[in-house]
Image (tube, rainbow, N blue to C red; front, side, top):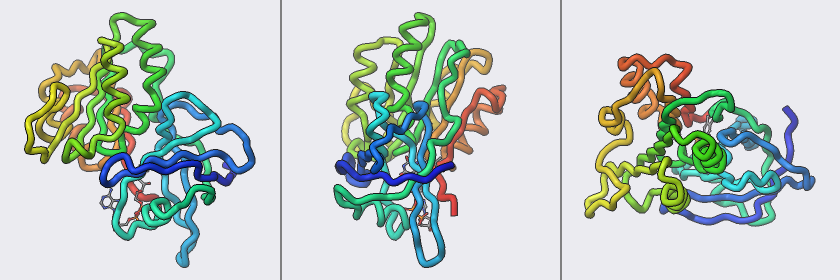
Length: 243
Ligand SMILES: Cc1cc2nc3c(=O)[nH]c(=O)nc-3n(C[C@H](O)[C@H](O)[C@H](O)COP(=O)(O)OP(=O)(O)OC[C@H]3O[C@@H](n4cnc5c(N)ncnc54)[C@H](O)[C@@H]3O)c2cc1C
């Protein structure tokens, strides 16, 4: 896959620990992708080039601008590089890659899209496609679940709430593991995977997407496998560093 340069157009802190970055290609070319895919960034280090992947969060289907959300890891190679990037700086990237995408041909009764933290970025990118799907199919429901520690950590919350308000077939729930204050209507206490016990999951008609923290994904996958879900209907993307 060809490498290309991305130029930083803007950077914005959207939670205490997450930066939203918007890039364009330095050569002016478009960067078409399927909602749910990711880019891999290349960082030169004294130990060789390190590769780090980031889900494309762009909501609008725009192919000229590419947005990502990065969570800061103290001392992390990509974290330090991207959190210190200035508007106009460039990074080398390749992609898009990934199979955490919606499939045109399938007709589940319900999509359950569960994430921790920045793992919700691909679901933000999928919003227009999800709206198209629920508009075409009045029997389809979509449930987006986002797990974080505190309300302040909820990234892209307004995008999901606005979409849910406009489309009753789409619901957004936030799971807050450490929030002490009173919960809002869309908020639930605990880890995101605790939701699975209360959703009347149906292995024959539900399709599940899991994205983000590997521990959450393993726990959720073990739970739904016991309920009879086959791996094909539980799509997983674990946020780990490649090298
Ligand atoms: C397909 C894919 C998509 C991804 N999309 C995103 C995305 O959209 N947003 C995003 O923020 N990340 C995403 N990631 C994770 C990302 O690629 C990096 O792994 C992450 O940013 C950490 O990289 P780093 O170089 O800053 O830290 P590293 O240099 O890799 O790690 C530094 C230290 O922190 C530890 N560490 C690494 N990750 C974590 C963690 N999550 N929590 C605690 N300690 C950790 C490491 O073990 C190491 O000791 C994705 C990963 C994959 C595979």
